[in-house]
Length: 225
Image (cartoon, rainbow, N blue to C red; front, side, top):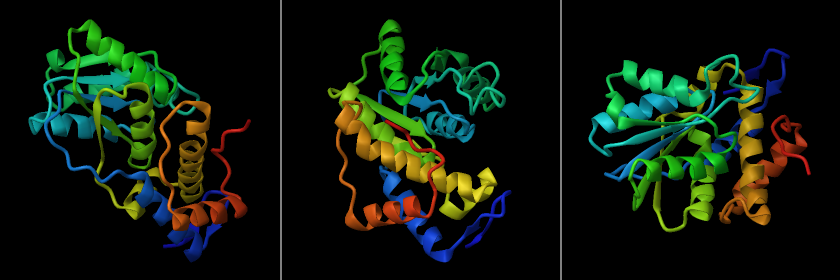
C-alpha cells in the first residue's frame, strides 16, 4: 500500500514495508489471560477503552484503571481528560462503575504506571499481575516502562487487534502514523539510557528499517535532547 497524506507526501513501497516491520516489533504478541487488574493507558485512541471493556466482559480481570490527563494532541478530542472520556466510553459499553478506577493526572507513560499503581493501592488492590491496554504500536514501550517502574509485577500487554493497513486508515494520515512508529521506537531505544524503561532488544532488520525512515524524513515525533 502506498499513498499520500494531506501534504501529498508519497509513501513508497519500501517505506511501507519498513513501517510494517516496526509495527510488528512494537507489539508484544501476548496471549490475554486472567490478571488481577488492567490499566487502560490514555491517548488519542478511544479503542483502548473499548478493548479494555471487551476484556473485562470476557472475565479477564475484576478492576480496571483508566489513566491520563490531557496533552496537546488530545485536549480537543478529550476536553475532560483522557481517563474521564475512557471511563465514559466503558460505561456506555456496559462496564459497571464499580469496576472502574480513575487516574486523571498522568502526563506520560511513566506517570500512567506509577499513578495507577497508587490508585490501585488506595483501593486496597496490590496486584501480582497487570494487563496494560494501549495503542497497538505502544505495547512494547509500555511494557518496558512498567517493568522498570513496577518490577515485582508480572506485566502483560494488549491492544485493539488491527492490521497495520486498517490502523493507518483509521487515523487517516499515513505520514503521521509513520512518524509515530519511528518516534516510539526512538523512545524504546533511548529511554533505558535515561532510566525510564528496561532495555529491549531491537533486531537488526528493525533497526535498519528505523534508520531508513529517519533518513527519509519521518521525524515528526522524535524527542530531542
